Image (tube, rainbow, N blue to C red; front, side, top):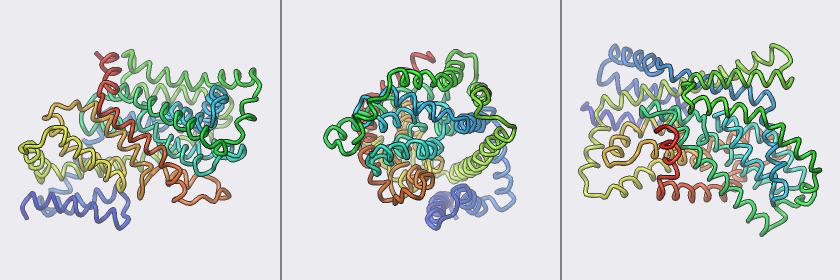
Length: 441
């Protein structure tokens, strides 16, 4: 078997294994192992797998991932998500659809200390949905807000997917973090504007507006003030990183320690089992994520051995298509892959092929990282494999009796918002690049 045929077989095997329901990390390992064994033999494949398993994650930067996950576990179990939600609702409670708007910005704030889109969605599904339901908010739209806003954790730093993209493409994590701030805030603002428009056109979507707005001023001020631990954690992590005081791994460690301190100080953690349960939760998520990452990196190495990425790169660069047409083609591929694959799988399958093309065409890899992350956000709420949709479906109480189809229906208005923001990011790269150039250079 020649190498290019082996490369095509490698991609086909991966897609087949995913279609039949094999776990994504195992699908990467199996498809890569079979093709590698055909080309290099079993001994050579085992050697390649061992090297990929060790050297792919031997970099100290990989330590930032479990530390950020641990920080998120301490923050979520320590009640900081509730503080963020109550504080932002107090600020927004005179706006139409105030609880929905509070959910949008709270997901962004909590995403800045958790880094996990699925975790943010699941937590706010338990916190925000019962409150919105109690006040008579439209249930389908409320669930759509939570599932869609949960994706902000993919864009607003510290983001797990930003770190993984940086490791795949050898880009600066600090620059990627900075590049995601303005697009993340912009998306939240567009969501909020849409909610105000929808509620003003149809007040029955948020019928308890007057009741929510009547909250006592001093009570609102107290809820805003109680956000200070969340703001402090974000300041320590991002301030330490951009001041040069911390590396990404050190900022993750500092954030974990500060989150643990606040969980103890606020008496959310009162016994040692609270700490160990959070550590166990973080270890389980880390093990799952690292299996996917090792499998994806092994798969990308096997794909590189076949030479298929280089052939496709040269073929596309030799075409007469203008650079923007090639860029649009790559974006369309990312969009459709986002409907059927998890983000790590998309990156492993496509980045070895498309990154040399994009750099050769003169596109900034930091800017494209933001585009890829925005497409990741869109994929998280797009059928048939919208990870955030299934995350909120599994986290909300059964008495709400909401189907997956209803969750997708609730996400559709916000999906259109994401497409609008994506177009703006493509048309105006400075939205993504101004802040990293200002902070880093």
